[in-house]
View 1 (cartoon, rainbow, N blue to C red):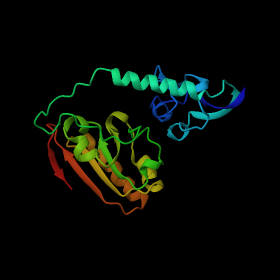
View 2: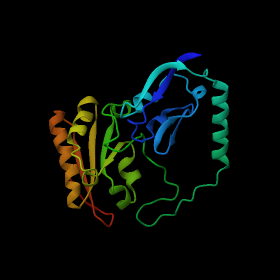
View 3: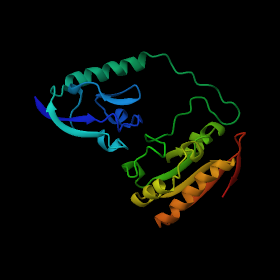
Length: 227
C-alpha cells in the first residue's frame, strides 16, 4: 500500500540517537552509528522522531510500505520489557566518601545533551533552568547529578576538543526559549574559560535578563568558587 512513512538521510545523520529514543514503536535503531528504519510496519507515520532530529535528517515520504501493525509493535514492546526484567541487576558501587551514593538515579531529563547536537528550540527548554556544563565536570565532581543536574536541562561541551565557539548556538537557545535561569559548571583549567566566555557572550547577545551562576570545580573534584 502507498502511505506516509519516514525517510532517513544517512548522509545528514550525526548518530546522536535522539530519533531512536523518541520512536515509541521501536521502528528506528542505530546501526553502525547511523539511524535506520528497521521495519516499515513499526512506523505509524506520526513523526514523533522528526522534531528530535537536530540535523533535519528525517522527513516524510509517501511510498509503497507495509501497513502499520500495532499488534506487532505491542508484542515487540512486551518482549523488550520482559528482557529488561530478566536482565542481571546493575552493579552500583557504594559511596566513595565524595557523595557518590549507592543507587543514585540519573537526573538527565533530555537527549541529546551535547551543545553541538541539541536543537536550538525544544519543548524541554520552555521554562527550564539550564545547566551549561563542561564535559569533565561530570567526571571530576561526584555529586554532579544530585547537586547540579537535578531539576535542570543539561547541555554539555568542551570548546577545546570541539574546536568551536558555542556563543552563537547558545544565543539562539536563549533567544528562542523561555529559560528561567542559567547555571554554568566549569573546571578550573584555562580551556574551560572558553565555555564561560561563550555563555556570557550568548547571554549578552540574547538581550535577555537571566541570572547566571558560575561554579568552578577543581581537578581533584572540589568546588573552588561560586560567583
